Length: 137
Image (cartoon, rainbow, N blue to C red; front, side):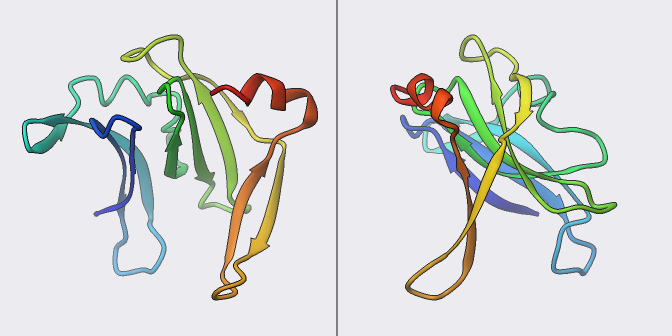
């Protein structure tokens, strides 16, 4: 079942979380897949198994992708179903169509509550020394 979708800034690429739920509320498996716009619909990217290879770690749940405007930086959530809480991760690539590499967990996560409905949500806190590097992305 596809359950999270991120669209690139140009509206031409979908980053989709594909999971299996087996009758449960949480997925038993989850990974990211990429789809390209073709006319008025989207088709699986022919490199979909290569581009997110480092992102989709076997045995882990990977979902909730967020792609940078230039398409070179990907944030996502990863959970070990064997235990532990979710983590926000960042992967980079040198060019469009290239695989994402250098996957690193984002160091600090802040849990916030929405003032509208009191639901919890997570967002990465970028350390001061990294803010300059990320400002123009």
